[in-house]
Length: 382
Image 1 (cartoon, rainbow, N blue to C red):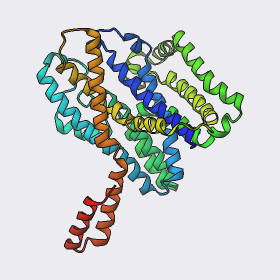
Image 2 (image 1 turned 90 degrees about the horizontal axis):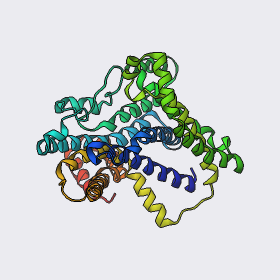
Image 3 (image 1 turned 90 degrees about the vertical axis):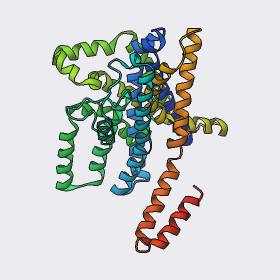
């Protein structure tokens, strides 16, 4: 993980999150259909596959370099997910509650699932919204589906990497039954990220092959969109499996194209590992891109309910273009504020939990000493 490649990964993470935001911003109910070309190109769904490949790479890297035990792996993944997911779902519930009362007609559609709070929290916090036969949308938070997939991939990776023997086989079989077919159909793209970490540096180590992988993958992708390859592959899938079966796959219905796209992302990033190996970004630019990448999870998970809420709040009079700018600005501002509060402080949150665990282990027998230690934790610098 060289500085140059880390910089490029951060840039790509933010770009992918922003593309997902734009793909929802382009819905006709938000912007009258003026930007529907973004949806027609299906860029938002493709950006999720980019996220999956990067995720597999990062998890393989973390498991090799930092998470030396199963408990360390669980702690790292759980804190990464829950530190953002729990407040994001609570914010979704709040914005949906307020927005649906300000503009009931704006929430009257497939994009809002007014389920009870307990059900939203139970399904979201267990990450089972898309497992097995489930198809649950937490309020207006449509993008949450990929978190259900991510959590499944984390679990399967952890079981494979940290368990062994009969125990690993039994637990793996149990989780495969719980997860079901939908997440597994897109898992090849995530596993390509794992393979990228383990084999990427040697896959395209020469300059010419690296340039071919980096640039050629982009050319193939653009030509694939121009030739309607994703739609044609989906049509073949429907012809082979039937319309009803493909519809039941929901977000995995384009699994053939998504697998091919995963290969293109793998080739692109494998080339980038060589091309950016010795690149050093200016410190100021590197800090900006690093911060934006550190907010990408928040952008991804908060933007949709924020879009729906600000659509209900902002006035419709005046210039349509100006209103589009306001809607995009207020949505991004909500995402960035959320990131400052919940995603950026992840290291401090983890450090506080580790100090609290140490406190409970060493001073649980003395309430007075425990109280003093808690006060030290609350006043200690991050």
